[in-house]
Length: 359
Image (cartoon, rainbow, N blue to C red; front, side, top):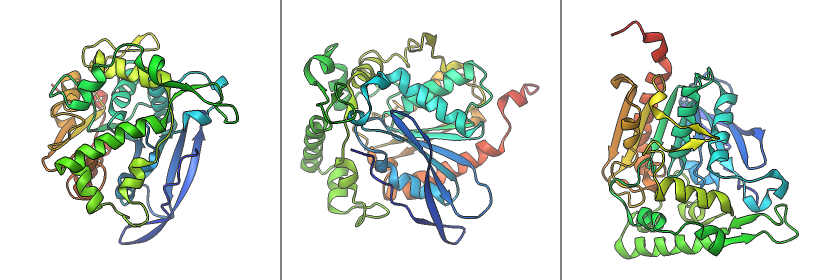
């Protein structure tokens, strides 16, 4: 299916309602780059929200986008349903995921901030590391990594342990399904959204039984628009993933933790976060996150030793679960203000390369 619309026609900014136009500025076989363009007004810091390639559509990030729009020029990188991508477009694994982030970052220029949650932080940190190592003049100004799996060996969760325990080739042998004739991606092997939905339904049932975050969101949706865009609808509208990405992501991120162990490669090039010295870094973790354990996202700071203390930030949100980091009241009241302040400081400050004369 086609990615559902974010359905954002206006937003409150600068003390009034401002019209918003959703413009597609890049359309690639596997992804779309949107610009949520506000009418009139002065230039604002650019921020690229990268949706997680988790089987959900980009509209899962609707609350994030709405919150950021008041004080930022917002772009969204979202992924297409793999079943609608022609087979001759080729494969799409983690290498292509990182390549898409790099291309989108270059399209937006050197002052953009990249923000990602869940699966996205791995690709964002890897992309920034590659651009930093290459001294790419269009490398981003800052990264905001939220609830990610930078080092899933730290405080492992049930979800992380399950993913790490999957035997090699499991997706290809057991779950990969060819797209049937009649669809654009006929013949492409995918991890069906319907199958993924069964796993998400079990996760939701566990949350309901234990009174977890999703139980609260089901009973009292705290999103910006719970009537028009209830969280469970955003959560349960799923797409098919490229089977090779599902397998590669499990192997690279969960089973082998290659990024954290210094063993990740991108197109035969080592991915070295230590090359990052002038890209500000913010990490955000939730105290009730049962997907990404405490310390898994914060580990990004350890991987970037050259980054000055003044260009780092970490935020703990004790009462937030995985989804509260980017959706609902915890996001709006505890995370968003910190992100706004961090981006303002990062974009307004000099590059570390311009500070080399300092001790």
